[in-house]
Image (tube, one colour):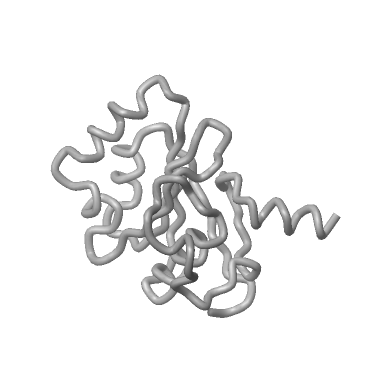
Length: 135
């Protein structure tokens, strides 16, 4: 993975809106609490993108579960080439509660230190640690 990979994040309050905007796009997504702390990190790709991952009303079921919680959805487009490696590196580093795999043993050799988060990014632990070190 090249140094300084940039992820431009967008924030949503509904999964159905995120699916519509990232239909057919390779992406990473984060389901986060109201402060932006990741609860679940996932990836979607192929020709259908996020819409394909949450097809058939599943996005609306997530919308119903999110209703009134203040929890957020963050999505960033990413190349097919880097998508899975970045997802696995973020899961290992961030340890989101609802991810079940990749929290004990790193499943990727990718380094989250080379990722630059832009836009409306989640509150990643590794990003805040880097910001403190740069100050």
